[in-house]
Length: 322
Image (cartoon, rainbow, N blue to C red; front, side, top):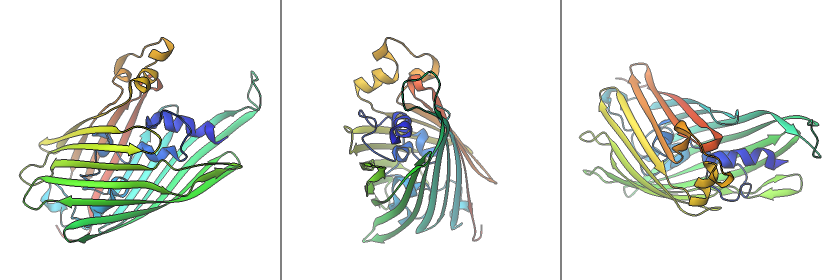
C-alpha cells in the first residue's frame, strides 16, 4: 500500500527512473519557492532559512540580503504553500536563529482509491500524509561552515504508518573578498521506512555546487550544482537570480533529465504530447518581491503530462534593531 502514495511523489520529484525504490519521496520536492525557482541549485548558496533543507552549513554564516536593514535582524521565518499536481498539497515552515533552525514539511493527499481487486468501484478511499520535522545547527571551523540537520520522518497511508530518522551533513565555504562560494551536502542518510512487511531506503543524495554572486557589489546569483541520488544517475542543475529591478527579483532554472524520463513525462512514450507550459519539463521560473512587511516568493514548475505545480512562500526577518 505504500506504493499508492510513493509513486505520485516520486513521479513529481522526477528523480527516479524506478519509482518506489526510495521511501519518503516527498523529500525530493524542495523547500520554499525561491530555491525551487532556480531548479534547487542551492547547496552552495544556502543564504536564507531554506538552508535547513539544502545545506545546513549555511547557518554558520550571516544571512545575505540586498536590504541592509535586514542583516541586523537575527530571526528569520518562512511559511510556504505548494499546489502540486494530482491534488497533492504541501505546507512548509521554517524558523532560524543562526546558527540554529527548525523546519517542518507536511504533504497530504486525500481520497486515494483503495482496491483489493480489479473492480469498477473502489473498496473505499484512503487519506495519506507525509511529515518531516528537522532541527539544524552549524558552526565555522577554520573559515569553513559545517552543519547538520537531524530529521524525524513519518508517513501514513490509511491505517498503515512508517517512521524513520535521517540526517543531512553539509559543508560551505564563502571566499572573503570574492563573490564565489562552494558547498556540498550529503542528505537523507538514515534508517529504512517499513510498511507492514516491506522496507525501503530513504532518497539519499549527495549535492555539490558553486555559486557566483550574493555580495553587496553583485547581489545577483548564478549557481551550478550536480546531484548524485542513490536511485538514479547524476542530475545537473543551473539557476540564475537577477535582483536588479529594485524590490523585484527574477529567477530561472533548469534541471537535467534522461531522455527516457523526459519522453515519459511528456507523454511521448505513449504516443501523446503535452501542450502549453507543461511541455517545458525540466525548466523552472519564478519571482520574488521584497517589502517592508516581508518577502513574497513564487515559483512555477512544469511536470509534463502531470501538469504544472505552483509554489508560494512568505519570509520575514525580525528581532534586534534596524
